[in-house]
Image 1 (cartoon, rainbow over the protein chains, first blue to last red):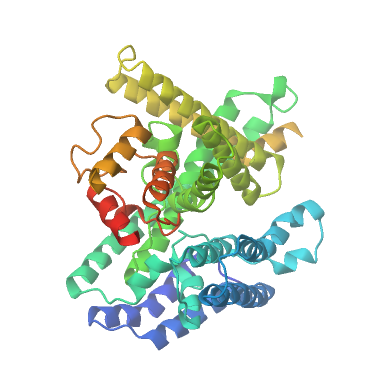
Image 2: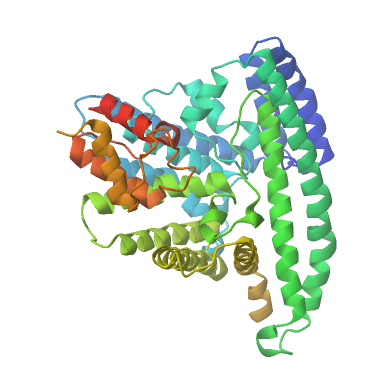
Length: 405
Length: 79
């Protein structure tokens, strides 16, 4: 049997339905069958990681043991009142926690086959959760973790492969609580709607753009290679739009499945998308696109960096400080996507867009009276933001790499 | 001596540059776009200095700090 990628095939949905049914009946009658939930998780994870490529599953087990060792050691350190809240021990814990991910990400660069042994589907998302736990242990937001709670959070199967990225204290509130019958009926209704919308997004609209249209415009755009300066053509513009639509509908569809299945299990996993193509500026966009990832970066990188710089009074200018924050955040995001030039450029592009947007907002604030603001300017802002975003996705797609090099 | 609320409001006004912040102590500062990430950090750092409290960034749950009244309650709790 092959490893089955979550939500990718009818078979997965059939397994899921069968396994979920007892959980749903239980919740309907106000009960959580904890043992059954663990067994269902084991079965689903076996289907995902222990098919023909069981190496993935072995890597997953070792990865979990490794992260567990770091997190529980750090928790023990923080719980001992004689210990100071050392910055260096905290930093070491974070670095250790991301080492496996860094290795996997460096693999294509080093072309070393042994390194890829560590990789498995979803390693990025498990690393986000692990680092979040370490950060919150440092801050005292997490004071206690049971091994079973840790495993349930990290291995929560609806979101294991690609998020949305939940947070431990929020997740705990849901799983330690049993929703009332009315609440649960609402969750079932909401979940069903999301599931249906997800099917339309991923398997109809996403399929149309990604599988039917994209290969055609790709061939067309590549035919201009070497024919025009930089291979520019209208086909390339078409590729940009088609790819952007595919990216959104495919990922938003997946995210809807993940939230829907969570809802069926009585968990309100946060949503990942909120009409991103209606954003009025780039900042607004990042509050609507891959939300759990951008909020993770906001809370655990950007705000922490700002906090640190402001407290140590490293830089006087708030504007410079914010800009350094954007560059750091988006460069890290770029490197996280992968070690290729286009992911890094994608990061720099978005940092530049954020900095430009901030400068514009400051200018607008000063000249409020001279600058018109009506539904036309708003429509213009949405169209402009949409195009800036689509252009960034063209960079992200790696298509320019094929076209130029 | 200012009351806690007055102090908080004056911090918010200094950071945002808006004079009417705090006219409604239950106004949602995040939903109405008054505080962005940068302004939030500025407010937190100032609160730390003014009240001598420790506000951890990650424990900072937006829903618990979203209005003047809520900030005041959290500050009282941390003092």
